[in-house]
Image 1 (tube, helix red, strand yellow):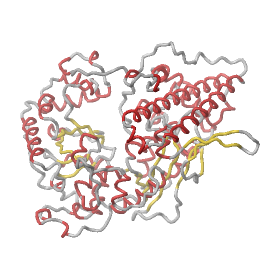
Image 2: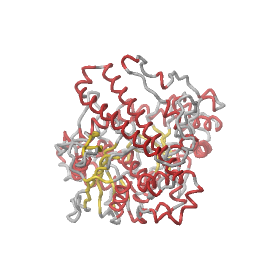
Image 3: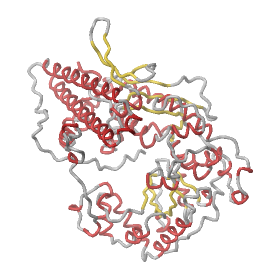
Length: 637
């Protein structure tokens, strides 16, 4: 094997620093407020967006996009989300005296749409202009996934919105992390007590004096992002702000925020990602990783490409494999000594049981991963310290000692797909890979003093997450489990066809033959065209809605337990952040809403003539094994 080099690429930044000729004509900056943090199932409270031209100015012919959703009859907003965003259930009495409920935010000025209307309206907004770059703050990890699941639930292609017609996407959160190493003088930084930078949008806004009046209001967050976007494209930094030693190391991207942004924006194209990684050959470079493991280094992770070390190249590859050079050298040494059989078992094993932490980083090329040459990150003292240099040198030497790196790399490529299995130790044969893990039963993992109500319940979620029950009783909208459905049935997920039922009449046979589609369509039809469902389908639909409501209530009650635990743990700190009366009001109104919705569903069931409920009731005594969602993230292109 050709030895890995512990030095920087001598051609650093020469061919990658030139102007990008950015092809984005329109930028869409957007943000959601939601019922919770589960991107697969969360309800949406608010969606806001702004369209900008190529100079980051608000387009004169586009008004701000700001909508709230109508309250869901089978979802309950998490109390933590309610407290942070201000969205709360409110009773309203109509002029005829009838009682209804709505979800009202702090501003209560946005127009309200049903989820179906929001989905198709939002799809039209995103796809109205060619060469549109879509971005937000942490959107890749949250908002984009919410969008994809929203579209999937409403029979719109969940992927095409961000790559067809020249569209692309970026993430300001990732870009800000990269600026901390490449162009740190472009921003002011909030430094925490441990010396780490805070990358929270509210902290970035505050120290840089950006207007951000209502954090966790979607439109306020969007406006803060627009200001941040302009700041990241600010004027060239005066040379006097750099020391003489720094001046000798400067690249254009270190001094010009605009050129730094242009350079990073190129990574939204997967071909550029692969070209850049390949160009680094066997040299170390930096991956800007927003994960917790790299927070101590301002989000920068020195890496070397395993693919380059073994000479792997595939024009269709969706992932690049990197070695974290700041990993524990003992872990690196043991990992690179594994046999093919051990590697296969290692990747099958759930991460919490692995004796050795994986030194590999597997990066999807279409998820806007950001990289830079090593020399360009000289301003990040966290990765340039003596201890860090010594650790990197140790790992490079370990890698150089691998006898057959080519076959080792080929084995990794063959078995890394097993990483989604997440097996317990009983599921593998190589027990030497396993570490002892102490854990308690999920239901016993909290205090169990009934007098203080600190006990959680997971009976319903265990039951409904059983693989069969999930298919029968709940909408199967776990996108990562159904990645190829929108591709296989493209005509069925054509968002341009609109939301009306007529568009489905030529696809009813396909829908009936595929359980996931059948489930999805029954819920879509029931949510939007209930009266058109036949009697038996109505019964099945109502049972699904009831199960979803019960599950939402169980999750709400568990979140209330979490609040109580925080109170017991540190009453003084808790009262600085939370208002007890507000929590009580949220809990009381949620209980009322839950009971009303449950009665409404029961009344609709009772109105159905001569129809059995298909044996779809939840039995607390029935035992069902819980299964985890261990599917890979959807590969969206």
